[in-house]
Image 1 (cartoon, rainbow, N blue to C red):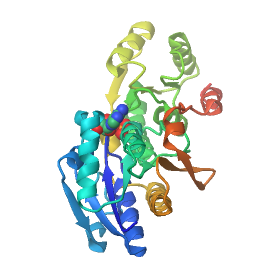
Image 2 (cartoon, rainbow, N blue to C red; image 1 turned 30 degrees about the vertical axis):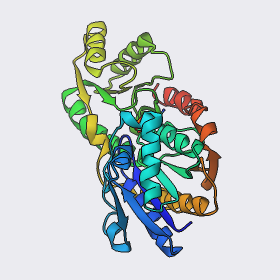
Image 3 (tube, protein in one colour; image 1 turned 180 degrees about the vertical axis):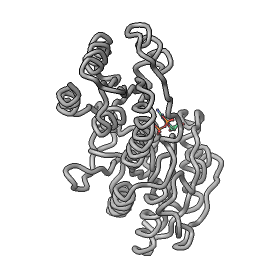
Length: 319
Ligand code: ADP
């Protein structure tokens, strides 16, 4: 293989740039030409493809977002869109593609592999919702952004003796809320994987107040309920003064943590190794600090599950 392309797709996440850098530098290290596809699959269909050099990825390892930009593209879900994309690559003599993104992006990569175009997936999403890898690129940074915000909110919650509901990202996956809740010592954590036990939330608040607690923090994943509505429910049920903060898109940006940069560098480099070894339809991941490779079909047909013991522990520690 002498020419390889890389793209970022779907929701962006901090560390995507470090992964692009690793792909580009590893290709050049192996004397392979590397091309960047701009704007994900949309740019692929439109032939928005540029050759990248060593210097193209200089000074980006510490930057959030993605230098290649990202986009969502409905046309790529069609056979015609996928064929167009393959043609754009083949016209330039490109023989393999590395897709940095989440599970939606991997479905696109799987389709290309099925059509005979070699594709490797690199998991990058703040949600940490992909099976086969302990961590996805961007999760650690988003988690630290949340903790930074919660610590600040805690200061004012203590000053004013308030209860705070903090809504974090996670439509279907509760990892961010679970890890943030445990790291911030939240009274209650509400995640989509667990049935909302409203009475338990209320009981914990009352119990805390009875023993003189000045403030309470509840971490709510967006997939469970709207923070605003949940806050109202709690206020009505407890008569406590409740404030709500919806963290929103600050969770997706920012300079990647050292963990995410290292993870992105390792996964990006391994994606190149695997592609050059002639494999296709594979996702690289990390398990027990070892870089691993699994079939995309297996990854996409397996549901990511939360660490149940961490959820139980959060309850035990916030008595
Ligand atoms: P993420 O990769 O972050 O999960 P999306 O679910 O939005 O993000 O998917 C990103 C893009 O991947 C979509 O806009 C589309 O172009 C492509 N994609 C998603 N699902 C499929 C599919 N079933 N077949 C082909 N392409 C898909």
